Length: 105
Image 1 (tube, rainbow, N blue to C red):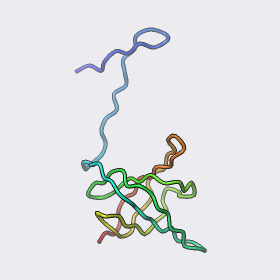
Image 2: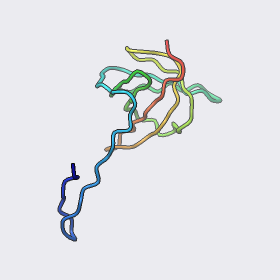
Image 3: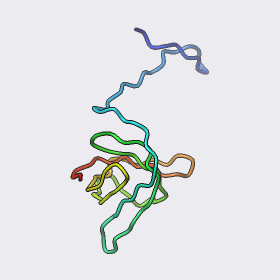
């Protein structure tokens, strides 16, 4: 199946189709999610759970200091344990972060 054509300023071009690279399905989730960042001072960050999968989750929050690769303690209504920050992005002034669970309970 060919990708659809889209109109661009220079004419019609083939749209780039994004392949799904996730290994597990995600499902929407709601509720409070909390992570604790360790350092000289432990910082607790509260946010909103966006979605979950068997091995990770995404949350929306306001902390811009999280960095990919950091390991944090976490808990939300579906799981708790240790997770690694995989990515961050800012959308409409809100930070979203994706986490890989490295040790769950």
